[in-house]
Image (cartoon, rainbow, N blue to C red):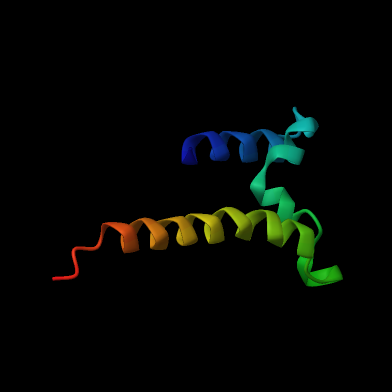
Length: 69
């Protein structure tokens, strides 16, 4: 997955595929220029949601699998 994200980012930076920036996680947050205009909360939410869901799923799976020793 990391290689594919790097490829998407490289294509966007070179400028040959501007349509790819909409699928780039880098653009979701950095595309709004957070230092100049402030944080783009929707982009930040798109980046944070999978991490929060994965952490919650991992905690639930660990609790179910814990041996309580």
